[in-house]
Image 1: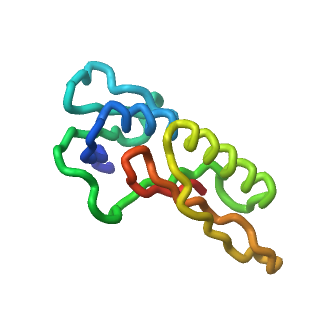
Image 2: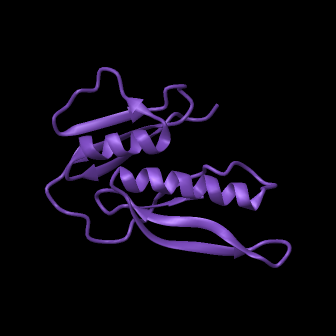
Length: 132
């Protein structure tokens, strides 16, 4: 049996990051967790790990050593046109919620075409993540 775990992070504004990531992942605020210097979100289906943030005084200063990849395109085999549309739609939602696009990474598919692989983004506090 796997061990249940939670992902934790530091934040200048934990409630803002919790709201952003709840939108990004389809999560909800953790019931009963109401702290002024912390926030936590959970998978409403109880499958994924909880994610929490604690307020810290220092700003982010370096690249993440660990980041979240949001997989909106499903699993292969892909229709590359539909996959790109799903990625771009999610990116648009996240930009509207305060994220920033850093760059697009493109791959060669099995026919030799270049297709969208993933989009590297920053959350509202500058933490890197990818949408694929």
